[in-house]
Image 1: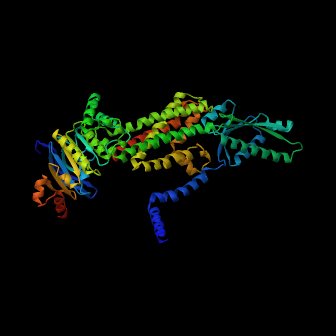
Image 2: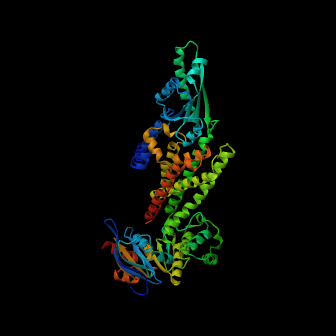
Image 3: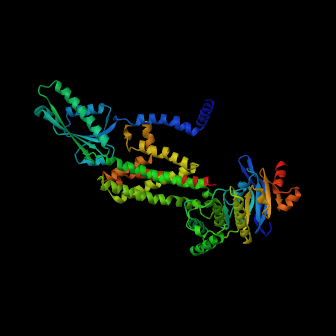
Amino acid sequence: MKQLLSFIKKEFYHILRDKRTMIILFGIPIAQILLFGYVITNELKNVKIAVLDLSKDNVTAEIINKITASGFFTLNKNIQTEKDIPLTFKEGKIMEVIIFEPDFAKKLQKENFADIQLIADASDANSANMIVNYTSGIIMNYLAKLNKNADIPLKINVNERMVYNEALKDVYMFIPGTMAMILMLISAMMTSIAVTREKESGTMEILLVSPLKPLHILIGKVTPYLALSFVISMIIIAIGNIIFGMPVLGSLSLLLAETMLYILLALSLGILISTVAKNQQSAMMLSLFALLLPTILLSGFIFPIENMPKVLQWLAALMPPKYFIIILKNIMIKGTGFAYVWKETLILSGMTVFFLGLSAKKFKIRLE
Amino acid sequence: MTDTSIISVKNLTKMFGDFTANDNLTFDVKKGEIFGFLGANGAGKTTALKIFCGLSFPTSGEVKIAGFDIYKETEKIKKNIGYMSQKFSLYEDLTVKENIRFYAKIYGISKNEIINKTEELLEKLNFSHALNERIKDIPLGWKQKLAFSTAVFHNPKIVFLDEPTGGVDPITRRQFWDLIYEAAENNITVFVTTHYMDEAEYCDRVSIMDAGRIEAIGKPEELMLQYNAETMDEVFLKIARQ
């Protein structure tokens, strides 16, 4: 019995003295619970909407008021004609357009029913569904109140339409997200492992003593993964298109160019990690926690960023996958050209230049 | 330094913060000799070796390798030296042929020459059957012999060996030293660090480092006379106890 006890005691020593294990045992569960608690929220907050009020009477004004006062929606824009609608959605901020037909109040009074149309941006199918349901709910609530004082029951027809993803296909969400995740995995994690493996086996020293320049070593390490990632991204797009019907409405070459940019960025992150990690195992752990996990949770892949608390939204703003997913969705689902993704492209380019420079510099220094 | 020096070191000092790893080292190594760089663990051997190979820079002092200045002509030095480290130099998942070809190409040897030399080399080692075998499937002793042969494949002026015979059986160690002798006969200077004191006796000259300084340098026989010792082991112990 004493043997067993002393053995258990030794095991406790091992665990308590290993900082890394302590972080995994305590830090990560706590962080995860907090993160998940805030991230997985099905509530809507400050969804930006636009209104096309063809009637502009007191009833429509009241309905609009009720909608914005609910706290779920923010009126971002007042559109004047139907022609403005596609543009509004393309700009990417507005999630829903509410259209009131002309002479709304009059129709309600004379004919006892009127029409409202809700158009939602379904490139994020789950959110679109919720948004439309919430909006309908508010309208129906209002209608119920009206009907309390009415002799003949009034009716408001709420028409729903989803744009970009009529059938609310999940695949429209998960293919861009999967691409962002897989490319990050291959380019970043695999690269960091490849470099640290060289360090671990001691062959890195041999390379450094040789006439090979550090820059060449870097390029040599990175090039196969660049090529592989590119091929894999094309495979994903092809499978998405052929098997799941995911379209590429915009320019394919723009899509591939943006993909290359993202791959380069991921590669430089991988190299950066390799300069910090001492061996393959820590390279892998660092890649998983610093890159993969945030990609899944904070990129807008699964959980909409708009619903997260401000702090997490700022954190998400630092994540390259967030911008890449927007670019992918815009090009593939919305069919937009460069004009609508230039901002995200600029951000990704800036990040790439920064990280490439930083990791190249650190790589050189680390080797000494 | 004299014309026959292939490595000349003058007042080499290397500091890491407050810690002096190499303290004013001054010595030289003659062309074609087998020079043993001895010392206990932590004495500063590996630090100095890294500097000679161009992996790090001295804090101060002059170092010339194969006639090239270590500060200004590092690239030229790299082309003229070979290196074999404690951990292996060869890639486990590549074959013998692929490993040799990879390193030979970095040193600029032509494809045909690589093929011919590889054949010659393997025949000499009695290892021709292993041309297409992966390094991980080869016994340790063979790996080391191959690693050494790869390090001198491009006929460098100097080859630096960092504890090359660790963990290997005595027979293989003996065979390894045969390869070293052969390299020296081909005018390749061999600079080897080791803590196997019996290997010290195979060298033409040795230096013994202790706490960052060179405490003794000369031919093994001379040192044994000087310190009144029968083996290099004893010489080493006497110096360490000073």
